[in-house]
Image (tube, rainbow, N blue to C red; front, side, top):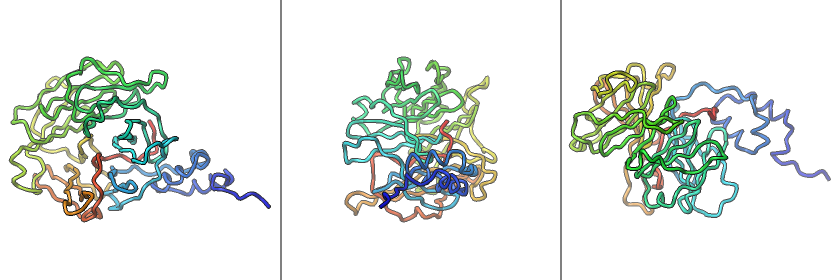
Length: 358
């Protein structure tokens, strides 16, 4: 009797033919995540999917979910790879980057790795230092040169070279209270929400290239930084804005060309045919051309509301669209509305779907 054939034993020619007919990114991701032979067989056979607007990675349970606003569709777990050895039942926390990678952290022992949810690729990182366990706050971003991370006190950097992989402090920023980190075009943009200060750090030398102080406004209760090429956008919400409920998201918006002569913040009136996507980790711009249901001159952010009558605590997530023209926010009518999910240590975060691993 012939031995039973498993999924990994299918002929590579057949797998290549199948992969060549797949065009949807989520389907390609699922195909590649079955096993190493499927991923290898797909190679370049799978057609490159069209550019995608951001998806929202949701800290759901028992499996992770992705929400695609363009399709108003919730995708189930893309079967992201698990660690080679799992010694704990608690699942890893995932923090997305717009560059396609997620930082996976095990809260029990702070084991860390990079996981690409759309290709199945993983890259090991050293465990985070023990003081990261003292708080749920985490800021980070990926660059081709390495990963920068912070839990609110100082900054750490881990080079992408495996031979030099270790979390090393950045002495010049030992006192930096980072709330978010964005990488773009060879530089990290470290934002301190409590003082609305932005520090620009060279991604190779880790030297401070520039510091942009806060604009002349009352320090807000909430602020977000978004990066788009040479432009920085600062979005602030004053304390009194909460009196107006969900109809207004941001009381002030500013922009600056960080490579220009004048690096003082100017009030922002519009962003043209672009949309900004912001969450507690990152902020970035996306051209809206070709995405019919994405509104230009709009800021997309994530809202959450605890459902306190459930144990364990659950939460409703939603997506808000704030028009820079009308200065009015609206909650998107979508499949997220009314869907309760278990509250986790991480928060929802935007990610740009891609098969590019950088």
